[in-house]
Each structure stands twice: as C-alpha cells, then as structure tokens.
Image (tube, rainbow, N blue to C red):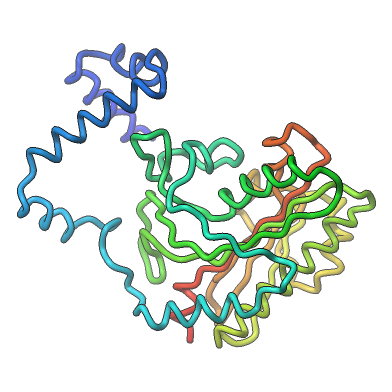
Length: 292
C-alpha cells in the first residue's frame, strides 16, 4: 500500500497536484470522464508504431496466450459442462462487466480488476456477473423459486502472482444459485449439497480423479449445513473470511486446489432484501487441465 501511495503522490505532483485526482474521481460525471479518457487513449495510440505494439505484446502478461494447450483446455470445458444438471442454465457472459461488479457487492480491491475507461471492467470472476444476472431475474420473477445459472468464462486478474498454475488470465467454470430464505436453513442445506455434487462430478469428468471437499464453517448456525455435506472440516482456512458468509469450501484434485465457493450476501445487497440468499462456486479449468 505504501509503495502504491508513493507512486500516486509522484504522479499527482507531476500532473499539477492532488486536486487533479479530485476532479477526475469526483467532479467529472461518468460520461465526461469517459470522453476525456477516450481522447487520452486515442492520442496515446496515435503515437505508437507497429514495433511498439509488438514489443508490448511480447512483454504484457495480460496479452500473452494461455500456457495451457487449447485442446486440453477445451476438453476440460466440455467435460465440466457435461456434468451440469438440467436445472442450471448456462449463460454466455460478456467479457466486460459494469465498473464495481467485483468490488462493490464483494470485498475485492478494485486494483485487482482491470478497469476500463468506459465505466466498466474486464471480466475477473463469472460468479459476480452471474450474481447480477440472477438478481435481475429474481427481481423480475419474485417468489421463492431459485435461479440456477452457470458459465464458462476466461477472466483476467490484475494482481501479480508467482508460482505454478498461477496465471494472469484463466478459465473458470462457475455456478450460482439465488433464492429466498425458506427457513430452517433449508435453502442452504439443499443448494450447498447440490453445488458440491456438481463440482465433484465436473472434476471426475475432467479425469482429475476423486476430488476432496474441504468445508469451513464461518457461523456456528451453519454446522448443520456442513454436517450434511460430508466434506473434510477445514476450520483453519484463512482466505475467504469476510468475503463469504456462513460457510465456504475449497475443492482439491490431485493435491492441488482447483475450486472454491460459499454463501455471499451479494443479491441481498443488490436487491435490498435481507431474505435473499446466494451461493456461488467455481472451478479453475486451467488447473484441472494440468492435472490430467
């Protein structure tokens, strides 16, 4: 954080002082800011040569092709989708989402997302976009009937990570189930078991062997939910606390983490109704393709 602050201070000094940031972030309307930034990028692109573009392509981790062979990844995509029950509707998501899709309903820092100059952001997590779609459908239909959606999407994450099976862009197989609280944790018990069953079938379909489910209870009331899942208790998990509510889980195959999921309050916040419930989960298909 200190390094980022120092860099921002340096840039602002060169641009005329901290007031510049206030104008851009707060005083200009969204459309006026877009107009300004479009002209900035038009001028910057106009100064580039073909050699400049090729040089950037050779060094830009966001633009480089995937490390996974196409046919291996395609087989994993097809295998995961083959495990999808008819109750889930596959959705073809856009490669961009509204600005704040990940940082506003959830707890993701906006700097971990590739923001665009048109008040949008490059897709970073299909579960967030599916949550928006599910919220619209829930608002239109009302009632307690759950909305089950799925997607396979290539996403980009801006934070720099090191190590094997860690990529700037990768493909996720994602599920969301949105509905209404029906009492006695019935929604939670039914749909947590359903998600874990689908994820387990998808891992097997990808040829990655028998998956291991590790379940973390974040609220003691969800002990009853965890008891019906049959996974390995994982009380020491650190990641996801504050992101998920009630209960979360990880999926492992061949000793590697390949999936994650849990309950969130996103649709409750999007719709302004504390009775709304949402379960999200996803598998990393690049990692699964590497294990087979």
